[in-house]
Amino acid sequence: MSDSALSAEAEALKAAHPDPREATKRLSFKQVFAYGAGDAGCNVAFAMAGNFLPLYFVTVLGLEASTVATISLVVLLWDAVADVIAGRIVDATMTRWGKFRPFILFGSLPLLIFTVLLFSIPHVGDKTTTALLAAGIYAVWGFCYSMINIPYGSLAPAITQNAADRGKLGAARTYGGQIITLLLVLVISPQIKQHQGDAEALQHSMTITAICFVFLGMALFLTTFFGVRERVFRENPKLTVTQSVQVITNNRPLLFLCLAAVTLLGGMYGMQAVAAFYTAFVLGDPTLFIWLTLAGVSANLIVAPFAPTVIRTIGKRKGYILGCAIGLLGGLGLLFLGGIAFPLALVSYFILSLGLALPGTLMWALEGDTVEYGEWKNHDRAEGATYSVFSFFRKCSQALGRFLSIAFIGWFGFMSGSSDEALANNSSDHVQFGLTLVMAGLPALMCVISACIMWFYPITEKSFAGMVEDLQERHEAARLAEAGAGAPRV
Image (cartoon, rainbow, N blue to C red; front, side, top):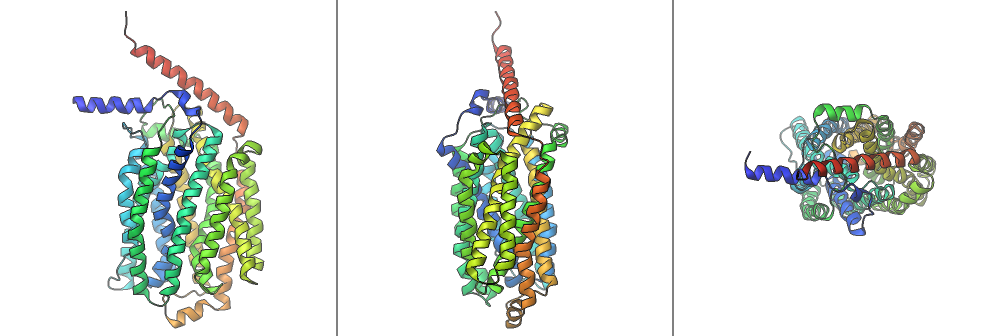
């Protein structure tokens, strides 16, 4: 091995073995802000695809709702597999920049470029060829997203082991993601109204928008790379496949969290997939999507700062269940009152968003706790594998939610395209009823199921504190042993 390779290996080992006491030190505002910027960068790609891609496929490319539902199901299931692949790559990596930050540095530009390509798909021959091309670009985009989002999500447990600061990191990524989502909706929703019925003009407009957001996304990713450091000691810098599998298969808390997440997020992503349709054809004005998004973002921004307080007072599990109860209330309000007047729909959606925001924020802190549990039980720390499994279930929830919601409105007679006939049909009472069921009834039902699952989540705040204390003792002993082994003999 060359001297440069030996030097790189030494730097990587040094990055993996910081002082264990650093892991419990409080984070500064700059560090929390820098971490949140990474989720904002991810949402430049994710929120644009999540909120507008189904509408783009149906109205611009002219694909049938059933075709779009199938593309969403197949590609998002592939994305879920890609998350596991990405997690394995992360666990086998260690550099002088740490384990996770290099992926953010080098993976951001490819992701943003493919986001532009995703909204620049040309009509190629018949609809089948166009659909295959769309699915192929979407699949590559999904892999690029996995290769940056899995390291980013895995980064939080490596930054701190302080429970309150983990709550702040979860709140920061909520803030970052929601602000970018709002910005995208403010920019794109007027374009949808302006170019309604003109697919070519809408495509051109959305392509230009995606190009502009490339520069913002890069700035946000670079803020995360330069603004945070990995401070948690790890005994094994690189894990084998066997070690990674052992850590996650013996992790009961991770299983409960994944099952709770896949149900709750299935309802939320299903709702998001039809939100643009709901405002255009039920509420009668595509620009009202701005108000719904503003209500949803406001709910997230209100809830996020209270996440550490919720953790300190009632704990993560009870806080999660409380959020589901609030979400159920809002969903029922939107279902039964939303069609009466827009203000009632807006208030109900705000309450529903409040409910979804609390467990959505607490999920990130809960996922970090499952990393500690895996290390405590198996003596190996596998953030990449743990987060990739969690993300696998989240992607499955996207696939399930979007497939069910788009297939459901297709079953209720929703027509593709931008013709006068399609616009008239999609404004009919029958189609409006189907859109309302998905928009309100689906998330309400999933809140109930998710709360029932989380009731049995096995980690309490007391048991988590005990695990961290045990791990700190192990890490300090390992550090002292390493220091002793490296001391000169006399």
